[in-house]
Length: 272
Image 1 (cartoon, rainbow, N blue to C red):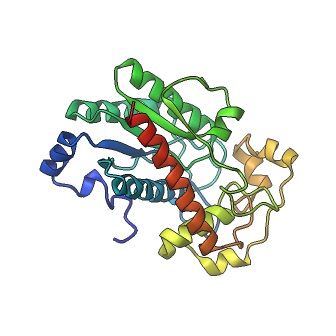
Image 2: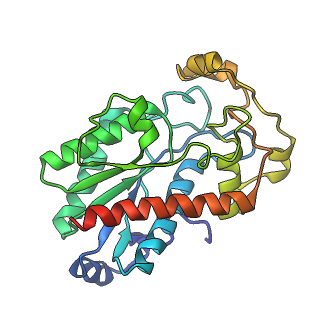
């Protein structure tokens, strides 16, 4: 059970402990991701495992600075609009995702939690846009929910850049990805290395080392994001990048930097 996504979450806490955390004005981290194919070397739960791993690291950073925090049960029924032709990629409608997540947020508010931060490790633009819309709707219901989002996504998507519920995390693209020689955005060097660091039991390292870089061009990528059979034909093995470039030392440093940036933004929100 060492790799359980429920580890360190409310699921493993008796309810009196949850009540006590509310009395201590703890904020909530809510991991939101998907179950999706990740090539022949990684499990389909990669994105939610990594979102949970990031949440755990952020929690450690916050607690080290005397900020009370709990992690909600991970939500993994998100949108897969690119890999939806692969077995193992659950395709959930945005409206379904919206209904369930809003009710989860309503529960957390009803219990007394004041600030809720959503974290995501899945790069699908429709999925990201859905989370942003959900957080906007939550705030209309007087639920103080925030979406921690890489500022690089903000600049590339049609989102309300001035919305207070979108907490921009400034990540250097060259320091948030291990592989810079090829386009590496799905089940490549970064995700494979982070999984090997946090959940080595779920990584087929031998198979990953034998995989060749996909070497997609920007034109290929523009077609790939259309999803369906188009994406499957471009990446028939279900990965985009260079999975063989596993570097545990670099990913450990990178994960620590990312967690520090996320925790700093949460502290900034909580201080106002």
